[in-house]
Amino acid sequence: MKKTYFIVSICLALLMAVSSCKKEAGSGGTSSIYGKVFAKNYNSTFTVLQEQYYAQDVDVYIIYGDDKSYSDRVRTSYDGTYEFKYLRKGIYHIYAYSIDSTLQTNAFIPVIRDVEITKNQQENEASEIVIFN
Image 1 (tube, rainbow, N blue to C red):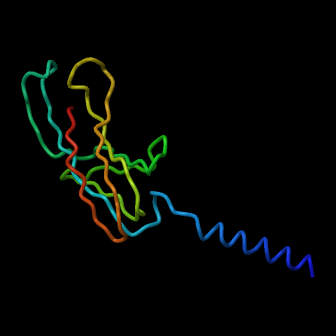
Image 2: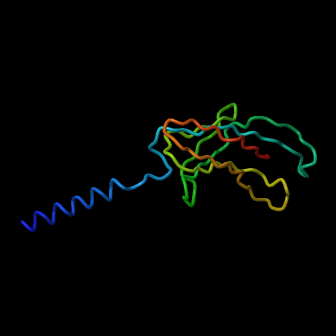
Image 3: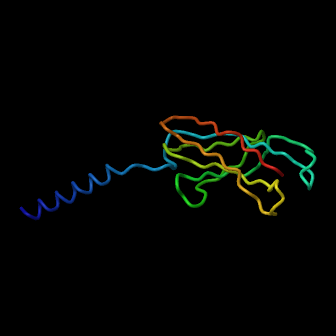
């Protein structure tokens, strides 16, 4: 009898622990985040704007919540649009890389947009990401 009671107690404790877990930001939901990437091409000293357009085939990254590195990546369409689907409630960081317009480094820098999903089946439009090429 004690053995049965012990097993039932453990099962109930596990069930309570699993059911009380809060799902964090990430895949597996019903919401989405979408947006556009706009590119500006300047001369080498960033003094003359040569052309500007919605950027196609640019990598756009998403970080789920407090993850340390990117969680997923998509490429922009012919018109600069991107979309991350099947997301749960939470905070997301969306970014694309740009040339450093301050000319202080030769490295690419991230242009980040933060988006929060607050309910299921939500479609969130992120503000436009402007990059320099």
